[in-house]
Length: 571
Ligand SMILES: Nc1ncnc2c1ncn2[C@@H]1O[C@H](COP(=O)(O)OP(=O)(O)OP(=O)(O)O)[C@@H](O)[C@H]1O
Ligand SMILES: [Mg+2]
Image 1 (spheres, protein in one colour):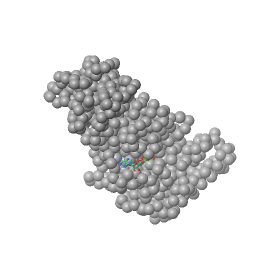
Image 2 (cartoon, rainbow, N blue to C red):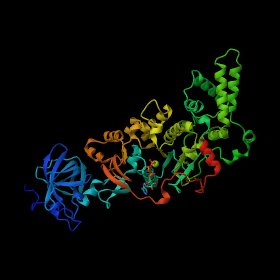
Image 3 (cartoon, rainbow, N blue to C red):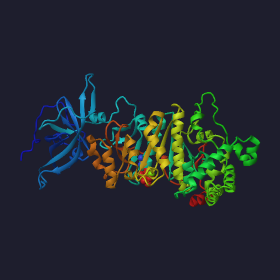
Image 4 (tube, rainbow, N blue to C red):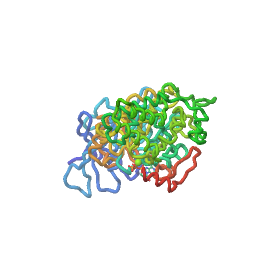
């Protein structure tokens, strides 16, 4: 069989790259022998020689097909030998199946441009060869969009992998991959880059493994069970019900009783005087400012109180009084047993040290301003990231807390009228927004879905991280327009990601089960084209890691004490 490549002479303005001097140029060449709508087969040949021809024809590589005045960029997705026997001495013909990605063309101003999709098909016999480094860079170039570097292209380490932070954030993003591939590290890298270029951006990380404190020694405030105040009165009725009834479905009347009790207690609330506060709460009240609303010159404006301050405080004391009155009514509206059980539940939560963040200091606050000031970094004090350590909270409140926080993030971004952008980063997102509608907590799902669906207009963004995309609510994933897919072992998970990617680059995703640690296939709005990339090296002291002590506002680290450990074990 006469190979078409041997001693081939051809008129072309394109010299194959010759970076390895021992590599004969004709070996880097193939000919298109078949073509259909979006794919082509290339005939080439390899020998058992010392150079590595598979460098060019390896799966996942981009190659060029020369059309004279333009070049098609195509992706190798399958390679197979033509003959069944292998010649050690000679050349072995191979078929290389490629998928068209786009075209490099010279535009009128003389500059080369890459565009997705092709305008003309390669004729049979067209020459295919290793892609030029310059073309590869063009393919991954963001053009007019500002980009930040997050690593390099797998195919060529000299070409940076860049993302547009603007597009990645505003259309939401997802990072998926099996355990240990480097998701959290990649998140740390992405967030670091994002806050560097967007001075108004705040990031709230819902951190179930308490691992981000170590990733941002300079940029984050760590909020754990001790530092956290999320007064019960900030919880909506259904969120509070979830805490009070601890995940068990409430009995018939219970949600209605709770609603009536809260409404009555709210009605009785009056802003306490300073001496009353001091008497009720001891001097601790003075340690925290009650109103952070005032703006000093040069500071960012405070969020508009009218739309976020919908949470009106009430006192547990009043709630207990209301319950007692309901019990004492001559004509019973609610079963006494249900009223008593509610009171007992509230009392035990109030006394439970694990719930101190909700009930302990709740009435130190008259508004939610100081709380959101801390959590959402307004003013920032140089730390735009809040790492919210859910790992220290009682398991049964995590969903309600995630709901409160996501809801606030949306409302606050909206109320700031563009003054602050808020990214909510959900690690292990499948826990809050599972695909199974029967699982999870409806208010959390609603709050996160609201950011996903409407957040863009108001500057609230969503980042979801999961090992199990198959278990994540598909409506949330479908709102994420940039996806970093790291290695996925599970077939169903791969299937979900495959269906998220546009047909044009579907073959890229077939590598999902075999890519290396720290590698990702990034696709969607935030990148120029579907790219296989490797995240940059993160210095050890900026890697997420579990168990590092918490970070104070002043940046000091504190090792966990035995007390902390006992509390966490109880949680
Ligand atoms: N970009 C990187 N630079 C340096 N080291 C990295 C990088 N990415 C990952 N690693 C190494 O790999 C380890 C695992 O990464 P990481 O914790 O980010 O994985 P993960 O996918 O989040 O895992 P899990 O599913 O358990 O949360 C890290 O502890 C670190 O040692
Ligand atoms: Mg992780």
